[in-house]
Length: 268
Image (tube, rainbow, N blue to C red; front, side, top):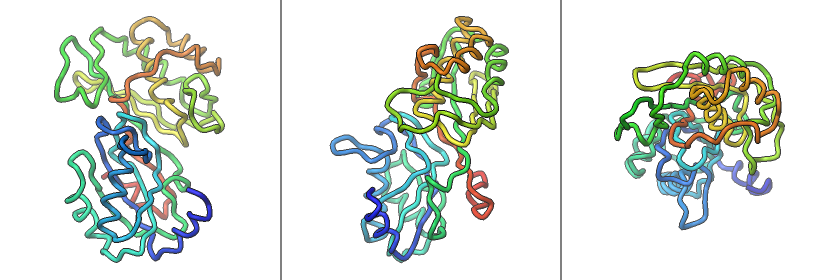
């Protein structure tokens, strides 16, 4: 959106913030696409425009890729529509397909931006283990049949904490931004057949989480050691890391803002 157009949109009476969840399997990512390709933003903007009675253009905390999900995506938009904010989720959800849901709605300050005001984002990645696939989880987890060395993977995870140059896990094609990020959480959890990785940082590079998980999976398979993983991180060379993990296992779960936006910090 050009700056002049942004300023025009900001002249509208209200700045509305939404927390959105979606199954990204059937969408070409979140960011608006040109027809006939359909993204989550295309669907949301069409419905919101109908409910609010003017053209809605969303800003989002994260541009999730094709096939990636969200349970805590945050968006905002400016509107002159007068529908009370407490009625927004029901009104919008009645028109949305079942794989996109508005979970909460807020009146935001004029200077609030879902993208630029974000302080930290959290992603989870799920791996389903075991010989037999699960048709009820195949849209939301990467199925790996062979046993994984979870102790080795957990040891490799610990090397991610802190501030690093994550160039080794950065895919080509992303925005030209600094590869240095501060990782505050890099955790592992076993839940029966699932391995769940949680990553929180002040920002993420293009395909960063999926490239990390793809490399962790090779540590689990014994192709790489935890020491190899550390060397890959330090190398700042994408060619050293493993293949990108599938999109299906990744979910944007949470976006953190300043304390003044404490409501967005609550679990939803």
